[in-house]
Length: 124
Length: 242
Image 1 (tube, rainbow over the protein chains, first blue to last red):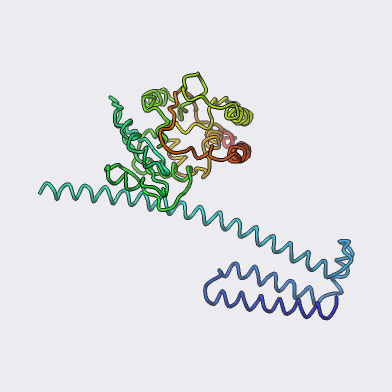
Image 2 (image 1 turned 180 degrees about the vertical axis):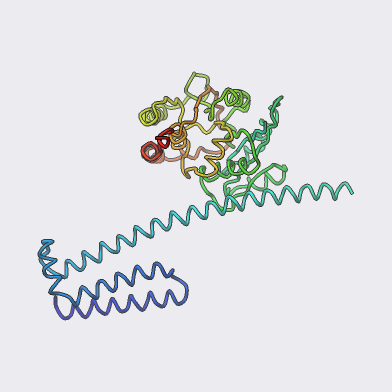
């Protein structure tokens, strides 16, 4: 892998790490999601500095360039993160549905109590 | 026995009062018939109409889709200990005079009774060839997975007893839920029956399915897959007793 590519990848990793850290600090990202991105970051960094081992893994997998393998790996991890996020969306949608339903039922109950109270007040 | 009619309504401001009035005309001797309108985050005047006419309604602050709206009704029925719940469309297409028959069929020992548009040719509102074709595919899929023939799996006019109310209050699919739930319910060992009903033409507004050419095709694919998943994932009644 060329020196320039190594420097570019390391720079990207550091920037992503810092960006995710700043989001977590401002509570704009959940810690569990930050861990996913930091995990990806660390794996990429380890990969960049362990070329010897990567070479043999690339040979086993039939990939000619180590850089291709790193990108492939990154792509697979990003897909996995997308999958986790899709599941989170479904989970949140379910929670919103339940909250909306319970809120509606509660509001109906309160309206019923108010109506009865108004009727009683009207009779007085 | 306490009977609740669940009326999901999305932008049915023009129809909802007539729908509720048609229900109020039904007189039952042995049952107490209540209704609840579920305003599914309508953007028209449905909520205001319900308030002005003092209707019993639940206002969902965001649009949850038909499944979410109907499930709200089942939860309401469950929390208030209703014995029978009846789904009844807010657009005025369902004929309230069949409610007695639905209840009678539940009292015969069925857990869920579907008001079917296809058992007999009663309907003045003829459905298209494509609609029938689609319905046949869904019936066929349900037959494969449950062994029972359901003539009108997409009918939104159906009644169920308190056991099914509890099931639906706890678990109900969001989109186009009827065929999906029928598959699950039959597999769980509940008794499903059908009675022929007459459908009335819409008086106002548009149907949610037929406004677009692609929607029916998408509907068919989605519902077919949902039936297959429900058929494969729901354990048959008695499987746990081994």
